[in-house]
Amino acid sequence: MKEVTVAAAIENISSVTGFVDDFLDTQECSRKAKMQINIAIDEIFSNISYYAYQNETGQVTMKVEMQENPKAVCITFIDCGIPYNPLEKEDPDITLSIEEREIGGLGIYMVKKNMDEMEYEYSEGKNILVLKKYL
Image (cartoon, rainbow, N blue to C red; front, side, top):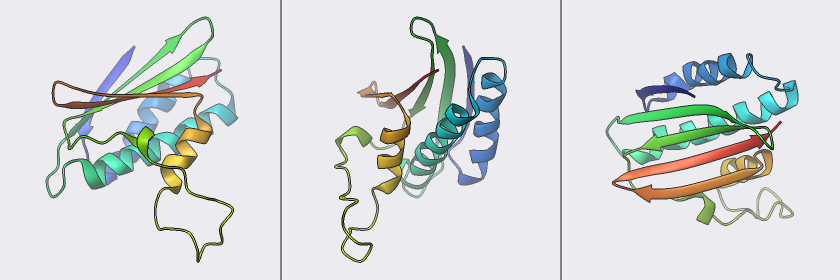
């Protein structure tokens, strides 16, 4: 398992994506899976950066590890921001036109569609979100 803690600031997206990419480069990870993981990291980290700490900058810890049987990469995001369970966010109706749709919600929807499993818990003042992608 690898772990990094950074400020929840939008300018850190490339460094956390690079952190996970470096780990994935040592694993048997397809280009497609890597791209899907990067989309998920971008969306989740952006949401934490913009919303978790309101007008302050807090910390985000990311952990990445491999699971065997079945082989999967697990990425965990941990922050001490306001409690937010993205799994409770209702999926947008993508059959509606852009004009008819409510603003927001597509990013979490894309994460749900690109990852194979997502788990959330709020424990000891921390949001803990685990994303899993089977390889």
